Length: 386
Image 1 (cartoon, one colour):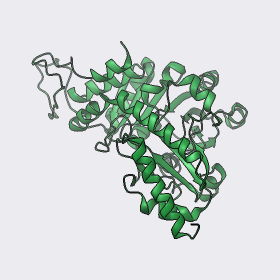
Image 2 (cartoon, helix red, strand yellow; image 1 turned 120 degrees about the vertical axis):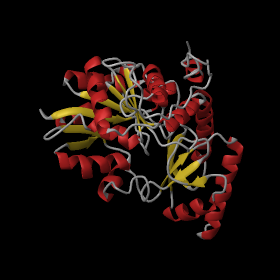
Image 3 (tube, helix red, strand yellow; image 1 turned 180 degrees about the vertical axis):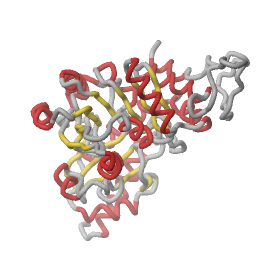
């Protein structure tokens, strides 16, 4: 069955009693035992809940994994994964990294003796230089946020296996509709499901998918023990969002491609970072391992003075953090999403004071371009370049 059909049918044939097409929200935290030593399969909602189970089974199936785990946020999902590691363990991590992940590693996991080295995960020479006997895993964002760097997943996951490392891939930006890292050799896939999977800026959630019996059992233990699980109402909201994922991702991609091309020709724009563009350094790798492109990209202005007035004058586009929803959002990474990354690292990778990140929604692309055009013109007048 094609992925579009599997997405649309999430939960629709799982309710055996009433035949409800929309799977019910089971609010119960406790479940009766038929008798001593017997269980319905549900005992306590932190361990297993009917609504969450349907979501987790769908996530595992969509990502070609063996088990799925729904968490209370994307950061809760990463915390659960990082709890696989302990004192003295070392991780290799994508250089261009979401600021919240960096904060979790450097300010929290470091307390438990876990260290990380940040590296271009597409550079095998650099990876070989940094790997040590204490290295346990590699965490890959592809595309990265916000500079859209691409990693050849099949090549790097094969390298990780040769070094006996776990491969963890953040698939938030492409979703299983466009990219399935486990099919390319990854062991664990993680999502901030708040973003494209939920898709409507109304649910906070994270998803983990694992491949392999032993790893899945380890993750189940951590998921239950740490308890950062997704509640039934949010599980239902996430399933509802995922039903339209195919339609939304196609529209996000079409809009983002059109707007990225428009920005390429604008006199105030220095560079556009979007893998769909032929000049992007990861374009060929992205085309080979993914069936499409995300709806988010970044662009660098020629003059930092444009940033504030553009963000103030956009009207249809919201100046707001987050990404992946039906509404278009624009963010200033240097002071928002990536503020926790030290200045010298931000500047080295290119997250500077001229960079804006644009999460393109599903509005009509002509309206979005018109909004950008008027904001650019207003900014131009204000800084005296008219």
